[in-house]
Picture (spheres, rainbow over the protein chains, first blue to last red):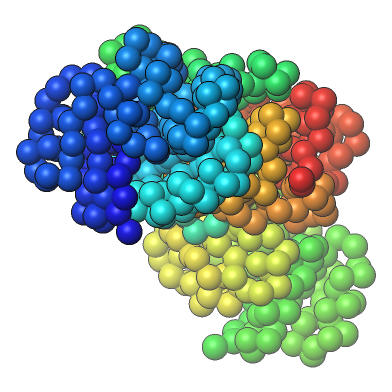
Length: 299
Length: 299
């Protein structure tokens, strides 16, 4: 299956994704702002080829994947000096798998189109575990033709692969996803604190809620660790806070009031302000516990 | 298995529960405020025995089930003239399957205890469909001995049967359940309106969200009907509004702030004020649609 592909951004997500591509027989031209990850991966396989800049990556391939933390990072890598834009020409494809503002995805797409190239926004969910296992969910915005072209690569790194619509649509659906996850954590936190402070064993609450209409994946996956106050990430509050910022901006741009997302994002601000930005996003529980002056615990 | 049991409250839930008990071989002494349902059920089987008042029910059995709309209805049936309390004595058991305030459950339990009788609070979830199918989830508060005594009856009408703790604990867990369900509807409503107004097909949003950490049973069960604006109940807003009132009161009694439950309950007030109290609780979507001046629809 393997062909040659570029990859910029070798962090907690990018590194295992590159490993999965190499394992599948791809040749991967890589760049990362700090050199350590480049050396590590190129030391593991001859099919990892180091490049000195995003432009040098683009010069050697016709498809480049980016996996970066935030909108400004993507703008730097694309529009900056020795950036991707300088190296991408007619027929080249950028697959940006970062979670960034839909508006940024659209402007990247437009800039590439002017050069005869194109872009997909393809943010993922599933975290580092999903990246390692190659089971990410991928939400894709862009043309049908580009979606088909990138599909063999998506199949290596992901499992649920959905073409959501035109440029920016992947980021919009990712924003919707993060809205629901954050609010769901708030909901189960209110329930756990209410029930526990009123005298009920929180394990009973989890058992009952998971059996009916109140079932949520967040309670299923994280309920047991929440009542143990184990907030090892998983997915960090700092990142979810960024994602809710994207959701709120997208709401504003489209005149969509998001009353509960707004409150819940302030709760993540509260956690960051108190030094908890590196905890797992299920630490939302701490906000409700502090409000009620009550710590949830097993009976 | 069947023994003789009493049943007061033959509404949308009570009627199919009595039918399931009769089918399982139980003799059921029934009472209902309006006579129609009593005649209907006693016309169907000789094992349904009509009684003229709650007291007349209690006089003929040692275990009575109540399934009533709200706290005042339970208070009437238990404490009112010719109420259950007058007919319940040493060793008798009341199994109240209504969803009411935990404080009311506790006061009913105390009043019965003074007569040597006892009570379980055993609210259910699963709606009329669950009542008909005999697959209700049952959240039980009371002593272990009473829980065991009622268990054969629970097994006829329910599927997930959880002993949550002492008197009132069943109601507390039910309140937690209703908090999560209401907030989950709000969350998916924000996501559907945000994504749809930003140009994405809501069916894509449902598909992606159901595949990952954003998965919720409410979106799974009701997402497709929500985007068709089919709000046939199901579970009516009027009832969920009552249940959130119980949750808010329980929060207040226990000094537990419930910031998002509070807002979401105001959204149900808005729907009731606009004449939508008899719609399914998934009609929460209408609040967010009205706020954004946008109707979610398929592409």
